[in-house]
Image (cartoon, rainbow, N blue to C red; front, side):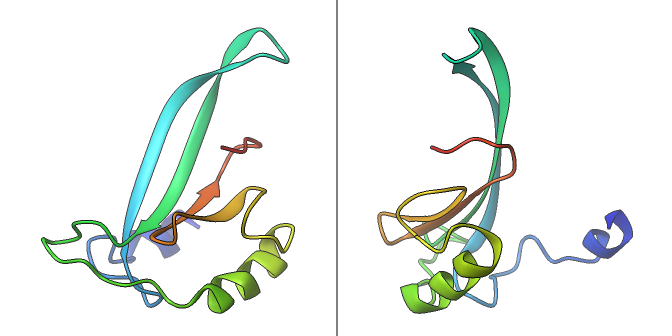
Amino acid sequence: MAEYLKGAKWTQPTVMGGGWWYISMLRWDPSTGAMKPSRLVLVDNFNFGGNRLPLAPASHWQEIDSKIDDGNLNQGRFKLASGIQVQYSIDDTTW
């Protein structure tokens, strides 16, 4: 997988619009009473190379969601946020 991802053009627009973002942080988990890692991969249309790049229609993202998550863009690990950002939680965490 690392070899495959090495050739990815992370600074280029995605084929579904927008640009890539990666966020990694620690978040408080009230169920365990401890901090746990929380990592997100985002596709966002905001300020990518100084330009806004519109995202593909929600129906396209819905198709992806039905294959990798729960099929609902409003919840789960894969979701559409504010209509301008798609989020995928790498860890078993929902935002």
